[in-house]
Length: 133
Image 1 (cartoon, rainbow, N blue to C red):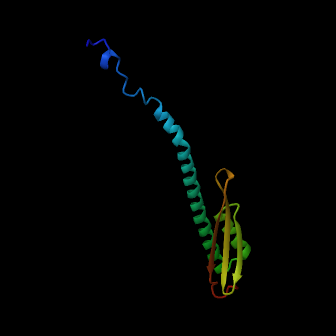
Image 2 (cartoon, rainbow, N blue to C red):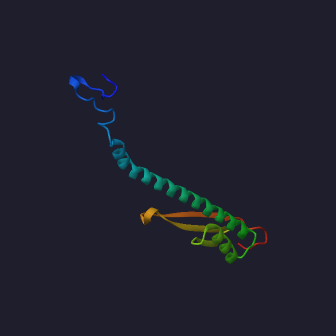
Image 3 (cartoon, rainbow, N blue to C red):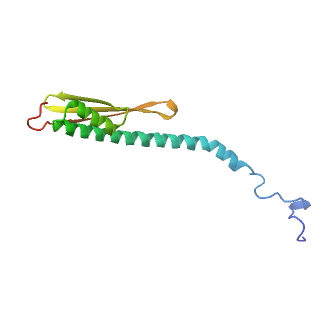
């Protein structure tokens, strides 16, 4: 065999290149797997967003309950809680026997509008002495 000739297989036929039979298979596999990867990424980002919103709503409910227990008017408690929970949050402040209860609900749009999610939290606090329940 001279340096100019391609390597040959048996009977003098040119030997096929190593990747010739599988040429394009990586592209096909990627095309099949990519939608699944994107769907998984959307699901993970949606779950992370929902978890962060749930934490924010729970923190807002606790802060509202503390403010209510210290004697802030219900309107001021609702305003504070809504600012902490987010613009679209629904806040409900009420007395429940010897407790003050703050309930917060925040709607989350699902991915591409396919599913609606809702974060809800409530917090209870005993009013300080001299604060009406």
